[in-house]
Amino acid sequence: MNGLKNRGVEDILIACVDGLNGFPQAIEAVYPKTEIQQCIIHQIRNSTKFVSYKDIKKLMADLKLVYAAPTEETALNELELFKDKWDSKYPKIYKSWHDNWATLSTYFKYPEAVRRLIYTTNAIEGFNRQLRKVTKSKTVFPSDDSLLKNAVSCDYGHYQEMDRTQAGLGADPFPAGNLF
Image (cartoon, rainbow, N blue to C red; front, top):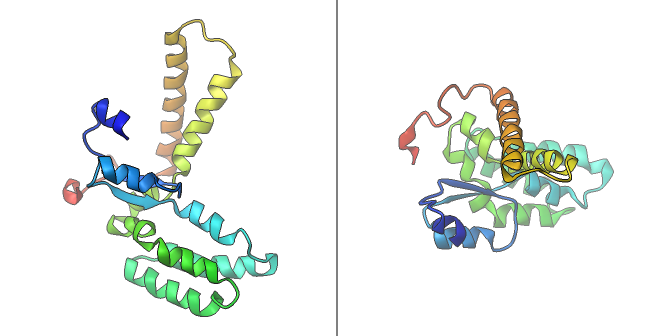
């Protein structure tokens, strides 16, 4: 984070993290006003790692009521209902969601269109995957400029893909700029 600060990044509005220990604290140490959002997809994967095959569909349906709720209050109510139903069989799931709620629920502060952008790190992971694909297919780049052109091309392609998948955002993904 200090490296970003030294290169001129003055502030980070929202950081979506994948649950790496200490990363939120590192961000907050350098950028104390940053909103931290833990990746919901990673949380779900960690939650369902040890769930029985026969329970997975029902459990996931109940868990979806939590993370897809329209408001944080509704999500908390659904989390309590989830606890009542599943805690006797899978107590670690509720505990994990409850203990991490502060960073799992950040996205509820924002409009629906913005939530879809910040609740998961999958877009970032997808871009990194595309970048690796482009750079691995060519073992040698004739110049730094050639590598840069390939990376920009990859970024442009990823941007177009994101543009197709993020319908409803319009020209401005943050319509109420005063959110920040």
